[in-house]
Structure formats: C-alpha cells, structure tokens
Amino acid sequence: MEHRVDTDQKDCSPLRQTTRKLKETKPNMPDESPQAQSSAFHPTRAKPKLVFHTQLAHGSYTGRIQGFTNVKELYAKVADVFNISPTEILFCTLNTHKVDMQKLLGGQIGLEDFIFAHVRGETKEVEITKTEDALGLTITDNGAGYAFIKRIKEGSITDRLKTVNVGDNIEAINDQTIVGCRHYEVAKMLRELPKNEIFTLRLVQPKRAFDMIGQRVRPSKCPSEGKVSSGRETLRLRNRGMATVEELPSEREEEASRKVDDLLESYMGIRDVELATTVVETAKEKQSPEEFGTALDSLMGEFAFPAEFVLEVWGAIHQTGI
Image 1 (cartoon, one colour):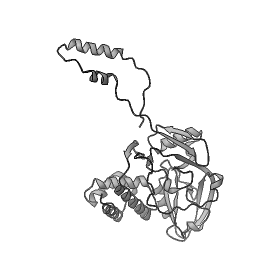
Image 2 (tube, rainbow, N blue to C red):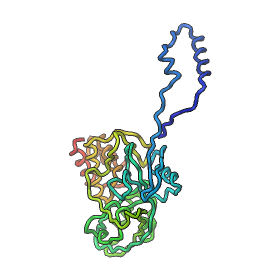
Image 3 (cartoon, rainbow, N blue to C red):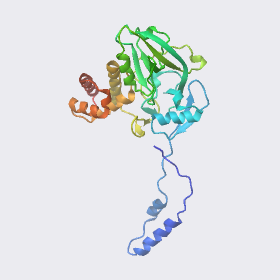
C-alpha cells in the first residue's frame, strides 16, 4: 500500500527522440495537441504515503510511521521507531493513552488518528476456581499473536478477582503458552476447562504511567465502540490481504456491525470489529441464510459458526435495512 512521490529529476531526452522517430515513420498522422504532449511528459503525480503519529502509551516522544499494509507491519513500524521488539507491544489504542477498549485499534484507522502503543508491563499468575460455566471474560486479540481481556462481566467469577483487569494479555493457561493463538481459540480453551477445578492464568499487564496505576478499567457498552471518529476516509486493515483506504461505513452498516459484534460476544465470548464488519459485507452479497452460511464456512470455516448463530446474524443484519 505504498504510494510514492518521485522527487528525482528524470532525463526525458530519450523519450523526445522516440517521439520524433514515431513522427518520421508516420508522416500522415496529425500532430498531437499541446495538451496531449504535456500530459505525456508530465504524468499524474502519485499520492504521498499515509503518515501516522505514534507514542508509547506510558510516555515517550512522538514518532511517525508509514508504509504498513497490515497490523503486524504496523506493530513492526512502531517498534522500530522506539527501538523495541514488536513482541513488546500488546495492543494499540487510538487518540488516548489509556487502556480504553472503546478506542482499541481494530480493522480501521482514521487518517488523522494518533496511535498509542501499550507495551508489556509486569507479569502475574492468578489461580481461579471455575465454579460456573462462564468466567465472565470477553477476549479479543491484537492481530499479531496476543490475546487479551477486553471486558469483564460485572458480578462474574473473574470480576471478583481484583488482580485481573481489562487489557491484561493472557500469556498462558495452566502453563500452556497461548502466544500466537487467535481470540476465539483462547475463548474456546477457557470454555472447555473442567468445572469446579482450579486453573492458572499467566497474565501480562500493559505498562502504565504513574497516573494510570491502580485503575481497574471496565468499559461499558457504547454505541460508538469500534467507530472511527476522525476523517471521512479510513485505512482498512485486514488480517489477510492488503490495507485499503475506504469511505467511512454508513450508519446502517455500523449498526449492523455492532449487532454482529454483540452476537459474537454472546455466542463465543469474543469481540472483533473487523470480523463483524467482514460478516456484514458477506451478508450484503447473499440472497438467503443458506447462501450466507455457505459463504461464511468458505471464508472463515475455522470459527465453525453454529446454524442458529448464522440465522440470528442474518436476521440482525437485515433488520438494519441493509
């Protein structure tokens, strides 16, 4: 997705000689207009690269990154600016240094958004007794191999453990490392843990500035979650394929994506704005729930969406009028 601006001086003399030869071999051809000749020697200038400003969330100087096409490359660019390893970055937020899951960098970045990178802080181990089927955790991931806690349900098992916080990276379950696992895989592992048994989570909390220490962040649901607030265009990042600059989604498309994201949380214990947006885009091209389900299996079969989930998603999307 690099758009280069070529500032080098070009020698156009060979091109002029070629033009003269063409005229000599085709004497009956009319001369080109001055406008046509001008456009031949002055091609349309390419758009410049997109440049984003970035800081480390716990405090740093301001750097600039450009030339990335996916989330992993974005993290590598940020790491290079601050001379750290990309594996040090747990996740990024947009326009705030706080651990605010409503501002989490997902599948879209506004062209004027400021990127804050949250890096590894202290490691802690927590023992949990699974007295209920659900732990009350919503899991997401950074698109580069780290799964972390996006929401803690009030009154749940995990909520009663004040050492577990939103933003904590889940590094291991019972000493089994999960680095490199997607969020839905981690959620599945946690659901399948035996009931009434003790298990251990190894967590890595993001490094925080002094004014952030001790905060236990539990963001409430917000209609604007995942919405990019700045600019009429956004940079759309994908786990597969190249990033593209696109127009902001319509209000109906945003509403449909929010509904799908809510259903992902209720069925699977994950939230993923990019995944929800992809599901909505897939539904827009289909004529029936059966065709929609077949397309989802083909596109993202690793999720193994149950039939009742597909039907509910189909209904929720079309209720928005898309």
